[in-house]
Length: 90
Image 1 (tube, rainbow, N blue to C red):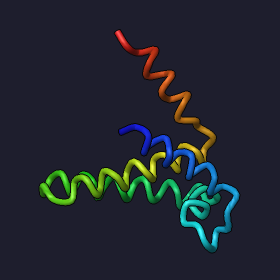
Image 2: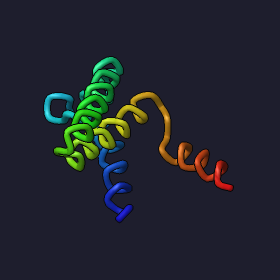
Image 3: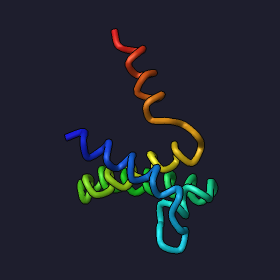
Image 4: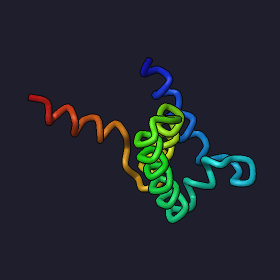
């Protein structure tokens, strides 16, 4: 199950080196403002989907993707986030 998430992270990191004309991910990675706007937009859409009980999985996937790109855009490694969560285990 989590192999897919690891693959997505790998792809996001690989897209840093691709052309912004050919890669939406690259475009987001190189535009902090756009990346921020997309995270906000996708979270709003997820809230609406949950409220209406429609498209929750689709919108959740959008949020997860855009959040991972946002983290990479801002130099935040998911591995560091996971380490922090591990520290919080009781």
